[in-house]
Length: 344
Ligand SMILES: *Cc1c(COP(=O)(O)O)cnc(C)c1O
Image (cartoon, rainbow, N blue to C red; front, side, top):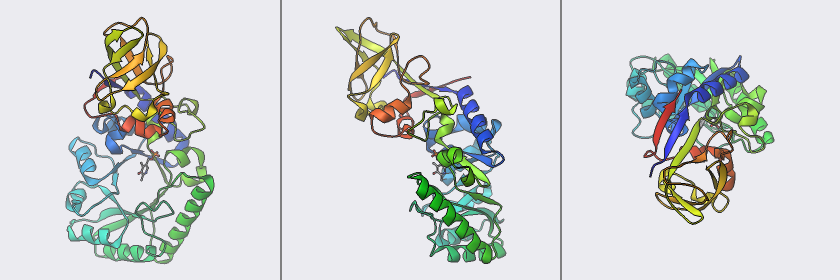
């Protein structure tokens, strides 16, 4: 177990700048959920904010509080809540909250925030992953406006999330969002921020950029599409996973990384590594170690599992292809025990 994930901060900076320029004049919110897709939330959050993002998407309140504790003062958006969510702490920390139901609004008000909490009302436009259905939407808007009158919340945003399943579905979701806004405005709501697009629509669907694009995976240099690579989009892969040769025998070498480190076993039998200046087939993946086909390797030699692809090494996108998965999963799975090394 000698694996390290090298995180190229310059590549991340570059990607955020490229994406913010694509989104402009819409604002850029950078998704740093899942510990910044396995790259390290606390390390990458300030860089995102220096490089063109004006806010961060964090999934839940504890992650937002961790960022506040680390000194991040930018707007933070958390939208996944449960019975134990600490809305009082979120209010004190000035975290903006995605709200999917009247029940969540009531829980926010019950936490006696002391000042109006900025809420973004979520409409389900077809993904069916929380959000108010078109039937529930008028009641959610009405409850939010009433809570606003009582000083508990500020009705700030309206938003949804795309399934990215097909162009037709995304277009229908955008139309459903516009319809929901019209319904809400007829009830008296006025939204400062309407947002829908993540990486995919942010890049390919200009009409979905609205006030703000919530970029995630693309900022880490991985394409949200399967017909074009991150490199072809002008992005640079941020994470490079390396390890070393731990023993050699005739025609094979054992390397210090396995599925305990998050390597995707499902990528066999197609998976390859980069060793000794050439592609080497991965023969087996164990918990802590794997075996690659190799000649002329010595103990201690570096082996690259995935990286930018510039030197010939595989990319996370290739791993995703081999494992019949998506690039997000390849990097997010890289285990906590793998040391992150930040280079600038
Ligand atoms: C993960 C997520 C994003 C970012 O998605 P990508 O496809 O990685 O760009 C944006 N918004 C929400 C609500 C998300 O859950």
